[in-house]
Each structure stands twice: as structure tokens, then as C-alpha cells.
Image 1 (cartoon, helix red, strand yellow):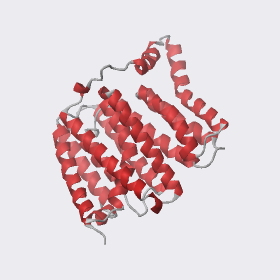
Image 2: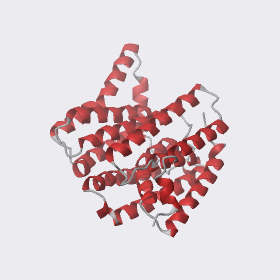
Image 3: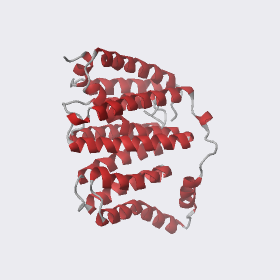
Image 4: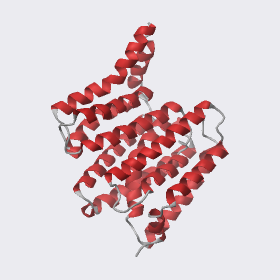
Length: 309
């Protein structure tokens, strides 16, 4: 029997309601600078692409906007509705990369789409250098989950990844100043030891713990009942699960990158969380659903004063 959580998850009013609430919270936070508006535009584009990612890949077995709604709610709780433009752009390009890359499922003769996917990943790394850490993981997942890795797609991925850097290098060479590119790659070797956990606020810790608890719950639920989904969906959720684990480990190693790491983590954990709330219908999960909304709202208010512009 359907619970109230299921009616909400399948409601056509869910996404408009969540989006409206998000806009109101943004107005409370204020948008005093051009950077604030630019970050907001990037977030809106990311939300639209999350809708496309869910729809094109049928991530949920019913018609629902739960993936994107979860993305918006948890972004608000994590304080990512504003933040820096570079982190917002990095998130946007990762969503683009996944959207394109998933179209190569079981197609190891798709160098064009692979090139564009890794070109987007390369663009993401221009704004957040540690995003390059995802490249070898993505190659492994292309082989195991997407089943699209071949010598042609691997070569195309390298060319796509390097394409943005070629353009930047040409511009900097023309400007006779290669220092910014050197500084960019130097960030890959700057690992704080011990990790600076003091840079993360109480509100940010609360948001992270909420996200990780929900992600773990969603992953356990999915993999214990994965037989209910098609093989393709299982492989895509395997992709999300591995990427979520990798991002969590990167955060543990570099907590001072809270905002960009959290933005990237939300991309891959939200499908797991949305799947859990959409495809469960017990009294307990109904209670968990509304408790989650209450806690997320409380953390959003706590982090409201921490939003940077």
C-alpha cells in the first residue's frame, strides 16, 4: 500500500514546490554580487541536467522528479545553493559528462561521445583540479559498468580530457604567462597532512553526515533489492555507488575542499536516495522520509548564515 511519501515522490507538484522553496531560501540569503547570480545560474542548469539524467536513463521505475528534488533539498542543506562560481561550474560539467557518458552504454565504438564526455570532465577539472582524480576511476567504470571501454574510446577520452587544457595553454602561451597553469597542476600535489578538519563548520558536518547516512541507506536498499531493476539500471547505480565512495574518500583526505566535494558527491548520491524513498512504502520509511525533510530544513537554516557569495 502506498504511503504519503510515495504520493509525494510521484506527484507532479513535487519539483515545482521544492524549486519554489529553494528560490525563497535564496532570496532570504540574498544575491548581492554577480558571482552569486552566476553560481545560481549554474545550479539551475545542473538541476535541469539532473532531470535529463534521470529521465533518459529511467533511474526510477515510476514517473517521478525525486532525483532532482532530492538534489535541490540536499544542496540547500549543504549550503551549496550559492558558494563559489568555480565549484558550481565544476559540478555543472560533471553532470554534463555523466549525461553524455551514459549514452555510450555497451557501445565500445563511440569515440565521439566519449570525447565530449571527457571534454566536459576536463572542463570540470579546470575549475576544480582534484576532479582529475576521477579519470582513472571513470576508465575502470567504463570497462565494468558501462562496458564501453576500448582502445578507441580510451584514446578519445584522453584527447577529450586534454582538449580544454590545449586551449588554455594556447591562450596562456599567447599571453606569455604559463604560471596559472603550473599553479593549477600544483594543487594536485598539495595534500594537507594531517587533514584540516577544522576548516569544516558544524553545519557542514551535519549536512555531510545527513547525506552520507541517506546515501548508505539508499545503497543498502538498492543492492538488497536490485533484482527488481533491469541490468542496465543496476550497472548505472553501481557507477553511482563507486563514485560516491571515491568522493567520500577524497573528502576525508582533503576536507578543506568541502564545497566542490559536496557538490560532486550530491550528483551521485541523490539517485540512490531518491530510489530508496520512491520505492519503499512502509510506515518506518514514511517516518524516515518526513524526519529527513525536517532535519534537512533545520540544517539549511543552520547553514544559511554560512553561505558565501
